[in-house]
Length: 112
Image (cartoon, one colour):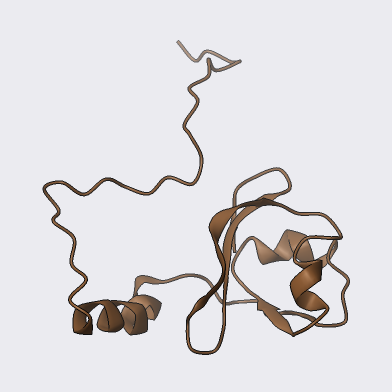
């Protein structure tokens, strides 16, 4: 989980084989977030977004692990699988995957 400010996180859920269970998305956190999954399995929450979830998600199958943050080195298993399957991106035409549409705002406090 990555903190997206307010009570929102960027997150995904994977099984032990790194298969998608819940796709990558922006999720608003409340006491019912992931409750359908937590009723049937344990979920380990990690990342800087999990800190705020710990006080809200109180399910018996929710396990919160502190000190684990997403690092590029942790992507090795996913990158290796994509490489073996021949899944490559043409960086000349690659478009970033933004979870939310960017909305520009005017700053409240102008410095200059």
